[in-house]
Image 1 (cartoon, rainbow, N blue to C red):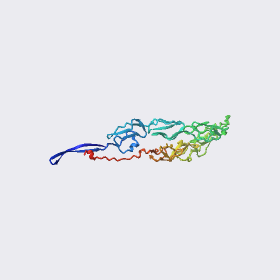
Image 2: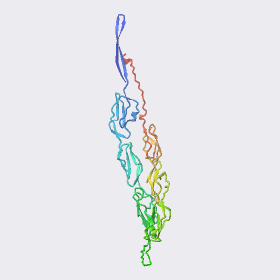
Image 3: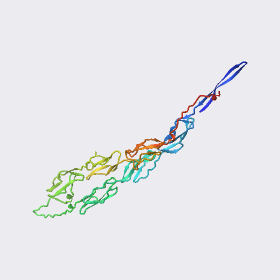
Image 4: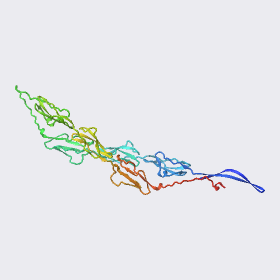
Length: 444
């Protein structure tokens, strides 16, 4: 507080005594006490905020300092974070801050990132698995103030263990599913013929590059073609033959009929339903009569794979149908993520497509300084599990006292912080400024 005294008025006063007059000079002086100057509460600039200590201050007299720091997700670029109150005004803030750069993520096996979106605070990059690998977890990472967040890994694609081949064998003798690129070789028992590819490979889609082969019965293979010589005499005629028969919609000749070379009168040809179809009605046999085939009565319809076997936490969208060739989409329950293919396809042997639903997990959160959490397991928290926090004695919890693992593999909020007591017990003092002048200040 400063006090200023000024003469306000001068007056002469006369007093009389016997035989004399005395003149007195009366000077009236007014002293004014001026209250100390104060600055308004400071405000941060771009990407800067007041420190906790400054936020807890209630007034800002001349000479006091206020301190700034970079906002969350930003780092100091240059300049001081301190300003000073001078003659009711703040000095200029020189602190400049820029977004934190998370840089390139740590290398992970068979995983790369598309960083075209940037690596600064708030930016998101896409996770991409190598060919033959599938992503498990989130498809992106986000740059937060503590670094990259987003959990994922690339797992090699696998194919279902193929069914055994009747009258044959395969080279696969493991209980594990074949992995991407692995090849299975087939051979037939003695006397049987392999029809199809002798080997099949697991592809990046989780399907094989072809169907397993078949081993066919030899009883229909050793057909001897006999060339018949016809002796033409005036009393004989050449034997009549039918052309090679052709199937109608969704029907094909049996292997036995396909191996026949000619079709004289009276011979029978046999049909069967094409792959992925089943008999609906009618006979599968036709007969060569007078150089012509009788009518084929066999009708076939597409195989119906029906509903897939129930699987834990997994359902299917069957709006596309369940007939041969149809595809249905696999959908995991909330809080679960799909591992494997996202669909099943109806084949002649039934549904194919390997997948399962695994519960989503979140990273084990970092320890809270000057505090503790309820999580004491080495396993990652699962979807729906909640972690509770508390602070050491004398520290204050700032933020949510608990966080929960969500279906995205992230928590519903950031972990809290435990702030120290050094800036909390600030006492607000009310200062009263007097404007009354004392007799001494007035010079009276």
